[in-house]
Length: 110
Image (cartoon, rainbow, N blue to C red; front, side):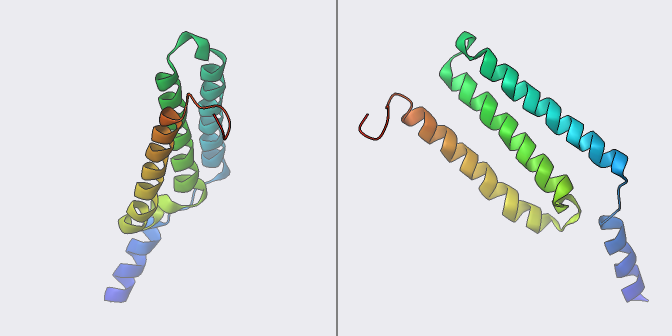
């Protein structure tokens, strides 16, 4: 009987979505991409730091959306979400730091 309860709980965690749900997620990711393009087009009106933070934040949102919905991480155990998303956040933070640190250098010898 305990196996039956465990199996039901597991089935609830991995719920199935129709194609409409994935089209909505795809549309949301397209809107975030359009925001990124818009930010790129108006970058001359903002500081370089704000520009980089906005683009990296939007990239983090898109990456998390793809991972959560298309790679089905959202239905997995919380530890798997933690193990994947925390290093991803660190990677984006390091990218932001290095981009800001070396933004004044041009090329390898710059």
